[in-house]
Length: 272
Image (cartoon, rainbow, N blue to C red; front, side, top):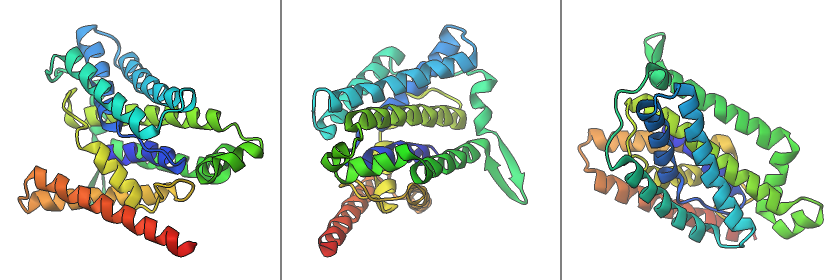
C-alpha cells in the first residue's frame, strides 16, 4: 500500500513528462518528522502528522519551483532533493529508529475481516485515494490540463493553460501523497524508520510504467498504476518467499522498468 500511494504522486508527475527520484527519501523524512514531533515534543498525533505532511508537501513545492522557475530538468532537481532529503533524515533522526509511538499513529495499520480475509485500514485509504485521483484526472478540467501539459506544453500554453501553475501544483500534490505514504508506512511498521524509502522510489516508478503510463508524458491512467503496484508487490513477495536476496530483487526490478520503458518507446514509434 505504501508503494501504491507513492505511485499516485509519481503518476501525476510522469504524466507531465517529468520524473521524481526523491519520492522514497521524502517519504522517509516525512515519517521521521511526524514520529519525532509526537514522541520528542509530545505533540498531538494528528498535529504531528500534519507537520510531516507539510514537510513532504514543501519538498514537492521546492521541486516544482526549481522546475518551473529556474527551468532545471526534473531528473536533476529530484536527484538533488533525494540526497538532501536523505541527509536531513539521517541528521535529524541521528540514524535512530523512532519508537513508542502514540496509538493514533498506528490506527491505519489495524485490520478488519471481509469473510476470511484481513484488510487493513491503510489499504482502504489507498483505494479511496486512487478513486479520487481517477475522478479528478478523468472528470475535471485540472485533470485534463495535466494531460495536455504532458502531451504538448507549448500547445497547452497557446490554449490558455498556465503550464507553470499546473506543474507547480502537480509537484506539490505529489509531495502530499508522499506524506500520506509516510503515514501509512508508520502505521504499518509502528516506528519512524530513517532508512525507509530506499527502494520504494524505483518500485513506484516501475509500478507506474508497468501500469501503462508513458514516461514521455500525456498518456496513461491512474488505475493502471494501481495494477502496476499490485504486480510489483506480488513480484517482490514472491521473490522473498523463494528466498531471493533483496539485492537481486532490486536488480530484477531495475531490469523490469527498463523493459517496460523500452516497450513504451517501441509502441510510440509504432504509433508514428
